[in-house]
Length: 314
Image (cartoon, rainbow, N blue to C red):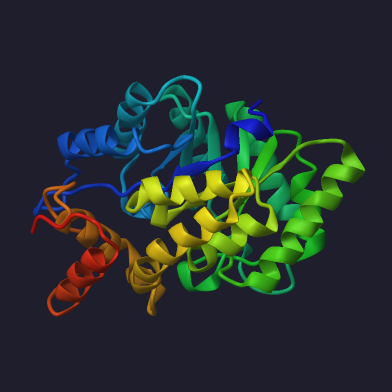
């Protein structure tokens, strides 16, 4: 099992480059990995929401994981996003992800569990069957409704945290009060059980505040783009270098706020557009039904990149 120390830092949620015919551009993805893996990260998250994971085929997901594992040192964690319509499908995907080199599964909320009241016993059965049959560590996912997530109550979170293979949780409600309460809950769970569960922020809208409040690390879509500065901001917080941390946050947050502005679902296309404008990837294409960024928003992103002192080549 991965220890909490394995998650102390930035794990960028990677984009998936695509060609104009909507096929995955594996060469561009490999070049993207070369660019991002030297920017102070402690792992990678592949096939997640930022990377349009729910639109990818099983074969595409496996190939992306294999390429990532080759580029990532064994000491760094490889997280695989997993979204499935059924338990059997989830188990099969989990096995394939582990064989492809994934260390941990980030479990997307299954649509069957949406709505109130919550169904913690059903979720427990679902998660347990995945980890038992695939023999792989799990990361829980507290995700906002606007991105298809489920915000779980304390009782449900406690039940899911009782699974021995749960090594981390990503909290991404974009709600600071909910974030603080969930962090406090998991600190209580750790104290009660003696187990360590890494608490990762997924809240791109308050990155610095997440770090200041004491998360163990970050798994965020914003990390796909302004990677080095976000990693440096986390490190500065770990060293109590508040002046540096605040300075970095002031540089990076305005661009992040634009990328994640309403409707937040468009952040995937905006992130790709930023990387395209920086010359990191060759195309800003997203897979339908997502819609790629057009002018004038492309011009707006270009100006924001320049204002953030990031290189623009297009």
